[in-house]
Length: 229
Image (cartoon, rainbow, N blue to C red):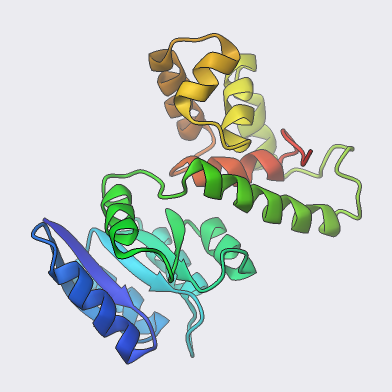
């Protein structure tokens, strides 16, 4: 049974999510919160599998709430929700440690599958959506760097150590992940067995301390391993 905590400042929105999720035979809603402080407290108390987190809320927003939940080291994983797929706050939530993000206008069955995917420890960002995330993220990244992405970025000591700890093959795999390729696509691209790619991805995530592929994408662009085309 997948347990879910719903966090949204709109009562009708919470009601809609509850009706959808409780109609599933293998899901149950363990609580609702209307703002970030309550979300952090209730996550610690209820330990849900997934926190369905709105971003824009009064008081503590979804980004700060996500950061607190992830930093607590608990078992709960956060799936953030946003009205627009290019909402800059969604990317900040991913940086804070969220497992992924979903659009509020997603089809009900997509949201259900997304929650189950996050509960299983994976990311809900599909390859197509990953590419859109990459486009928006790197465009913003390029603006911040005044078009100088062709030059080495200033890395933190931790980022430098993590990058140097990757083998040449692991860097290739990470670069492929960062362009939105799936494991089968990476296998074809690098002429590897799919099982080998899966092993490489697992090692990369462990070495860069990324919870999932979404975090890996952000890391790859942050350290300048890949650049926008």
